[in-house]
Amino acid sequence: MTVVVNPFVGQGFTLAEMTEAIQLLPAPKGRIGELGLFRPEPIAHRNVILESVEGELRLLPAVTPGAPATVAGRDSRKLRSFVVPHIPHDDVLLPEEVQGIRAFGKQEADPVAQVLTRKLARMRAKHAQTLEYMRTKALSGVLKDGAGNTLYDWHAEFGIDKASVDFKLGDASGDVMKAAIQVARHIEEHLSGETMSGIYALVSPEFFDRLIAHKSVKEAYAFYAATNPLRDDVRRGFRFGPIVFEEYAGAATLANGQTDRFIAQGEGIAFPLGTSNTFATYFAPANLLETVNTLGEELYARQVPRADGRGIDILTESNPLPIVKRPALTVRLFSSN
Image 1 (cartoon, rainbow, N blue to C red):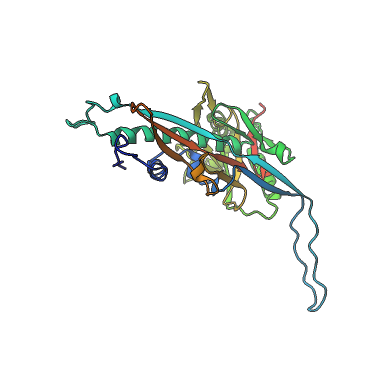
Image 2: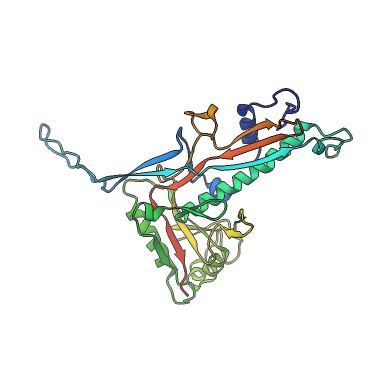
């Protein structure tokens, strides 16, 4: 994509033009983004209100025509309000970054548009990585921001105990299939009317290595002619029992300079795929007067000329709230030995 407006001439880009430009730029998608797990939900407010229904879905009986119909019961409802995190990120375009600088592989001076595009691309990548980090942590049950601060514990917010299954990968006589089925049964029992197409698990490299090296896994694939974890590189995903396991070694550098892994060392997280209303990312409007009462975008960008004419401030922001509406459908995987 090429930006064609010179921001040093006239008013340059409008908010709409800059926002469209930065959203069209390619951004590295993390694994959660590739799976399409968290459906984007634009909202017009800075808060998300969710209704927690402490009831259950029951099948309807057949009755004789003309007989009284069954009456819906009154479920106990609770409202939860969550503030959408505000994540601004700014940069500046200075004249010396353009003056006399050649374009890559060319002799002519680098256009202002190309410098601006490169800056927007870097800013876009930072926002994308932050969103991937927030989504992965939310999937594990705790929403964190780019500084590693805990914003919400979804299990605590909904009053649900966090489910964990011990695979006991250090025990050669252990039954890994039994543990996998235990995970599947827990998720199936807590669907409560939700639908799914399968069960997926993102696991740390340590968990993955011990999983494929376990005796019961080796025995299960000893005579398997197709994809075989004993022979092939299956870190991108292989099925064992009811679960597809994938190694996820992602990590992010936090705002304080420390590194935090997306999946905790020696652990994993299992979750259902193909759900209709379990995972979502709410996007709120930008903190600007011109976006009041409009539906939120994933990312905003605008430019503000400096009063002394010595630069253009490039302002970006995102207002995402990745949320797991049914925390009981995620299961922590670990090995105690």
